[in-house]
Length: 86
Image 1 (spheres, one colour):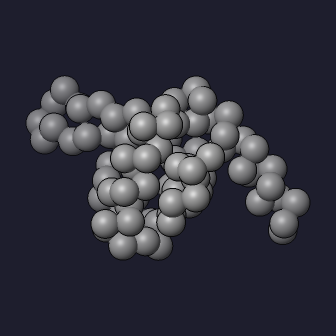
Image 2 (cartoon, helix red, strand yellow):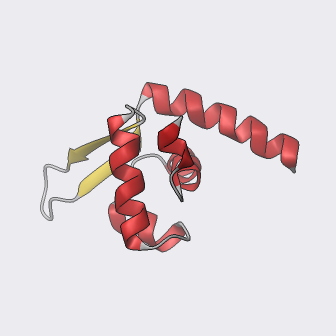
């Protein structure tokens, strides 16, 4: 639960839920947080098993960030909460 308390973590999880696998630049451009907050949130989300990273095979080799199965389940619950709150 502590990983979701991090500034921007919830926004990142919801963004990944809507977009799938994205780059760090995509997150930076679409989630309203400082870059240091994004790095901290991503580290905590990865440690909690909610996100995964993989490198593309073709050039340029970008790091793609996506939700794990556990992360998708958390995102579903967050979307339900967002819907209730309006």
